[in-house]
Length: 553
View (cartoon, rainbow, N blue to C red):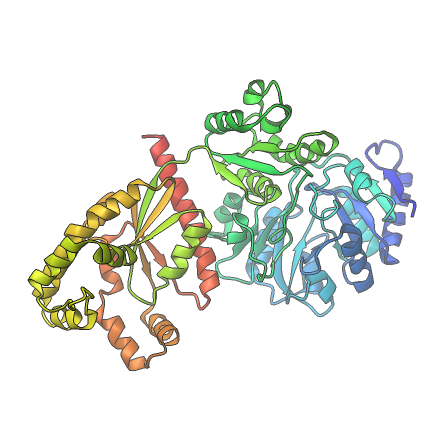
């Protein structure tokens, strides 16, 4: 197939010719063809979003996974009822403020939108691009255009018409050259079917700008970590490795000076380097691509994809990239770099951070602690350490046996039921046992914590009673509504509701943990996986805040 290439960058004195080319592009779209179109974010590979056959061609040309949904492009909020159902008022509020612009809203779909466009979801993403050429094409075509980024699936997105020709030229009908993309990263994707709204993909509209208008926004775990194979993406760019050049990428986070030094330590001669302008001089033996000044995220967003793409024409075997912080456009830039790296990230500011996690049974501590492990943290289960020390330390056994004679067998095995009957009947006896446990266990736990680099979490039901809280940078209470805790314990331990309530009522209540801990992580979710994602973002933000405090004394 020969791809028609139209250059519409110079508009002076050529209005009729421009209108003819826009009409030609619209005609191709109406007839089920594919057109590479310019937007302010990246170039899109456009098709009639209501034509299943045309949409399938997008997936074929890109080599795009079938469960990766597409975004519909419209000319304004007046088009929403055509394609979306149950539209909340906040959608119109956002459209008035940010459209045309780099904001995609996820809404319930109308039947007119085919499964091919939504990847079978009951929702659809919609946005109004801020580019006069593409808006004119949509109006002329008279339908919403489904348009993912115009790159081959997995490669860095296209920010120029030349990039589109390089990736899919000869396989689509037309490419419209509307000049380089002004923003340079894809749109921000916000799920409005949830309350509060959830950020599914950071992009050209900073989340802080949206929050100033509508209040708090939750952030999906996929922003900072890859989805697991069984999870379905709710928006483009959430699940699969994206934006990747041929050579493997390592992203280095942290302060600009520290990340530059870390890269200089690791990068051999001939490696590819993506760095801020101020640090390019450190890499005289490497192939360097500049992102712009460390303080200029607008320029970094414009350059990030071109920097990644450019290494495919070199012989570099590995690439290291400096990463901006998560404020403003930095969240989107960092997301794209981390996606390109398959979330292979090194923190140049890494230092030991100790968190203490506590809370009652059924609150969701296990899911929260798995989120810590997803972040690369080390979880120390104090109960497991207790049993190990009890099995190995004869002095520990002797101290317990002296205070509670007969709780050990002749072979030295602890009769836990007998000890439990002894200590739970009388509060003073429980206090005596705990005093012994803390005397032997706490020094061991201090040694274990000292051996861990980076993020370390103590999982301790008696975090404060034992004094372990003094080791922690922050203490976190994992809490949950009583009725949910009862249901979880019943399902988990296969016990009756009455017994589950007895177990919950026998423990300290959430008010105790709230009063003691620095932070609260509340689990009102019916889904362990959803809470795990929420916990991931909670811990990620908490760790960033602690790191910032430590950097500044």
